[in-house]
Length: 261
Image 1 (spheres, rainbow, N blue to C red):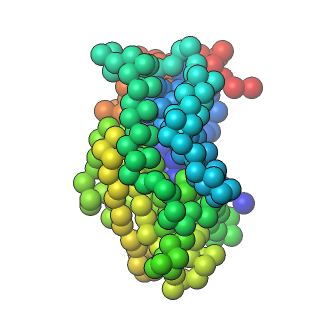
Image 2: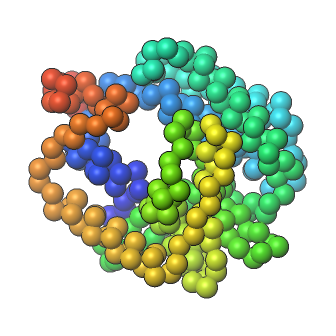
């Protein structure tokens, strides 16, 4: 059984060449991670710890959440971290994370919305050969409405229009797994927390839409599996790509020393 993920699919759609380097050739990137990725993982860790504590019967203070964030930031920080926005420093990004957590904490305390799991791994069987794997940031069972909610945290600066959420693939795929577990008649809400905007976005999918998405995802995977040419695709995302120095669009090549054994 071959296992794909939403990020793997997105990588192919954004740039087939990057997909090839990462998933086929397994090339080690020169840049370990970007400051945006570091910010995102540090904030996610703090929120995961917060809700894990809540499920264990204790609500951490805001200071404790910030301390957890600061410790994770320091522990996982790497010297060669990539900062594209030259007018900002790593301290600026660190302070952004504090503001995200402060706003989120004040808006959502006392965190009694019915959280049942964090970082829950899901698997969706598309056919006899392919599966989709994912991790749900936070799963909620709202006992008042008997609705399941899939929550996802975003630390990006930009806030997409509502139309983007109505066609988003990632959480919709996750909802397929949830419905397979709790029943197709169970209502599932898709919830995004855009922390930079202190905003919550909500969307839903019909069972017919999910059936169509499942087939579209399988078709995309079969397209990837049959692809033999992986051209580079230049876009605004290139500045944040960890493989930019190896990309022919920017005069780069993959050196023998960069190949993973």
